[in-house]
Image (cartoon, rainbow, N blue to C red; front, side, top):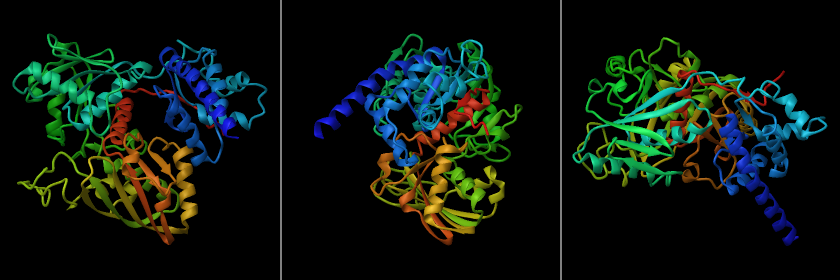
Length: 483
């Protein structure tokens, strides 16, 4: 038995190794972005691929191995496919329950819209220049994600970052490169980074990214760097209304601005997957709301759609951020001047009120508060809700599990069912929020739902999704619901 289990593991390892170059070919040659029940298969290790197959059993209740998915991947490389997003895991499960004679005939039916369509079917949109205004925590993670996606027809081209000049510019470039290369929370950068001192640029996995030094947007003419019709992603938080963010639009070479913080005034606050379709073609300034708003709104929408929400309270347990002090010192905000690594800090959050901007049907129904805690990343939102309909924990969890796997919000809602997970387990999670099923409490119409979220990486993935939407970058997704 011992030898049999190990031999099976080795066989699966070998098959996963054989699968990796095929996934790479689909990605770079055909612009096919593959996933396994929502988890990306691009640039993943052998062990990661095997773990993601194991994940399917936990959330879907169906055994799935590389023995099931490899034949589909291999066959896909021979069908001359057009660009698309394809969930290999869902296709494999569907194939197991199908009456198809062979894998090829099954794929020809399921992927009919893109079979033989390479260079014929195109993803919508044209290449779009992107500028990161600011290069802090969110800016650097956005850079990682944009560079990672550059090889598969993503069409978003990171052309420049804008930072303030700090003395010796040559040394400053090296510092910026080092901060992108090494991260205490998210680990080392996957790839190579070099510095072009003469051109004042970083070369990141072959992407030439200009580093522009400026103290104000008005100092910059982006067309001087060959950048045109760009979207500027402002992650400084210095300006949050139309007047302030409008400074970017006054620069040559800029068409739109996206704020990575809650917008003020008439600026649209957008949670991708919920109200991103509210972005009109003429909207030139958009906010990606906050990390907490992105984490809770999808779950709240799902629950409101199914059970109805009469009222509730959102308590956020949030990792400390850069605006707090390492040691006790002056801070304009209440309590935030106290040492972040040494204290839990009770503070305010606008997330509950911000929900109404994405979900008007919940306007006035939620209150909120926040506690900053001594962890560097990953936070939790506790949703204490009074529902219209009675239910129980099992039914509520089963519904949210299905929403995480099969609904249009599958990239926003993740689901975990384990008694052992802690915050560090969710570092790098690409979903807006992760429902912790074991923590769910339901008593009739009263429900308490715990939602984890990587307030840096998960949020940044949401920002990139908005960027893609603003740039009209979209692809067909398979399997399709053909009901």
